Image (cartoon, rainbow, N blue to C red; front, side):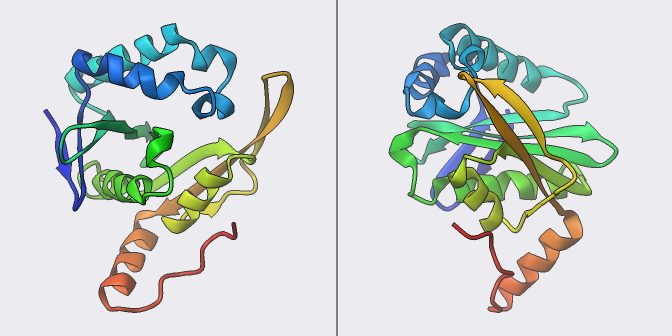
Amino acid sequence: MTTIETRRLVLRDFTLLDLGAYRRIRDDVKFQRFYSEDDACPDRTDALLKMFVDQALEQPRTKYQFAVTSKTGELMGSCGVRLEGAGRASVGCELARTWHGSGAALEAAEAVIDFGFRTLNADCVYAETLADNKAALRLCGALGMRIEPERTAETFFRNRWWTTVVLSMSAHRWRENESRAAGGMTPPARLPD
């Protein structure tokens, strides 16, 4: 079982025992607002958790969707990194609304991105989100990711069109940001709110 510990969190592989808590997180109507109807249904939640458990058993392993838990073991959400080929890895994070604004998403995402660069040897990580998801855009900005303007798309769900945005960062830039932070220097500018 792969486990990453941070100052306040434990990121670990999912087990089938997490299903009830994972359902409660994803059943929240406000949580679902940036997911399509198909992605927000209970059957999809069950399928996702089973897929995360199966991915943890694959050899060689290229997909890591971690259960994000508090140090006391409470499931807070998930955060993952997936090798997509040619040195690129996708990242994503979802937390229960009770944890929004706590800094837990930033802490989990930093750990997962660091894992992607150091352990999986990715050259670049990227995240895909909806332009309307301001919290996700702020998180990506806080991580040092930049919008890739040539990689936007439109998708239709919940009776409207949504613009999808891709943000990315190179391993070089990640290490550069780390050394600035370690040296007490001001980190690079972030995306506006």
